[in-house]
Image 1 (cartoon, one colour):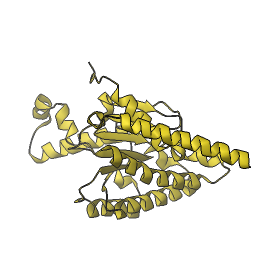
Image 2 (cartoon, helix red, strand yellow):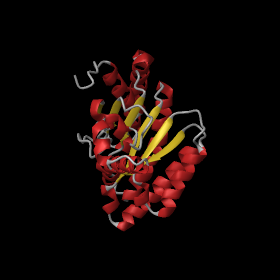
Image 3 (cartoon, rainbow, N blue to C red):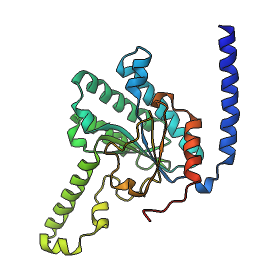
Image 4 (cartoon, helix red, strand yellow):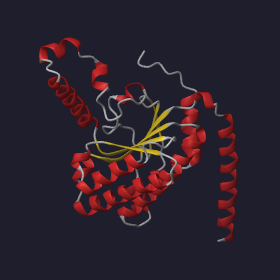
Length: 260
């Protein structure tokens, strides 16, 4: 036991030194303005420990609060977090109810810090009324906070977002008396972008996905067209500050081509 504790102490000390070196070498001018994060692996983390799925989601919520603090430290101004997809809404009721309760509590905890501006995004009408109301309430209560904007993607799907954006665009122009033919003559990408859930925000510079999976799963399909991606093997509850710093280091040395 003593030998195991010693090895763990040495390992932790080495990581702290490495973490400080990484942080010192990062150029603040090269930091991403907007980071998207797909927090994957909560269920696998819980299963590996023999715990309940909800334990993994609670650990993931705790980790997210830490992650937001780390993002503050390096100057990230917008964080978009993929918490619950439209596909997730088809999970068994027992699991889904617990997950939604954890997300509600997480939103309240983020808001209660007074540090971050919460902006719920997604098809909130697909959520239970109480959940939708709670998310909107936290968003309204934090709207004037001068801090990092935290987009909480709940009941979110990239295809759903595009369908909602086009629907809102058509409704807007119908209200103005614009015909379909007239709209077709002038329609461009900016018209659609103005009706996305993240309208008015810059697109994510960097998207991080944990747990070793390397796919978008419908996350910010429109906005991530020119994003840089970083895939991390760590399950989300095990994600560390050093993992974020590695992602930022990887981002900083890339030459962004924006599709060119």
